[in-house]
Image 1 (spheres, rainbow, N blue to C red):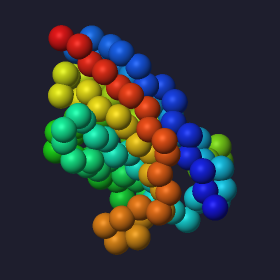
Image 2 (cartoon, rainbow, N blue to C red):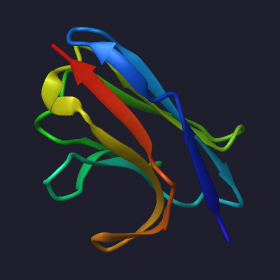
Image 3 (cartoon, one colour):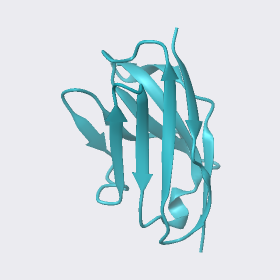
Length: 115
């Protein structure tokens, strides 16, 4: 069983930066990890993912967000720069992709970007 705990969310002005962290308990080294987000009234969508073979970003965050992973510490990070008001959402850490779904989810952390 894997548990994921996110941290680093908060409020920031547009143009600012935040770094999200996700600590995993349990073995995830053979799994991909990533970040989803869900804004009010919108569907949850994949922001970025990373594994030993590939890293992905949604078009809306390319060039602004960077995902990184520390396999020794069992953590994944999301550095978010040049934040926009449209980035306001609850961000969820995920682990262990199976097809289009992910097995493990964190509880979410709120990111609010104000103009």
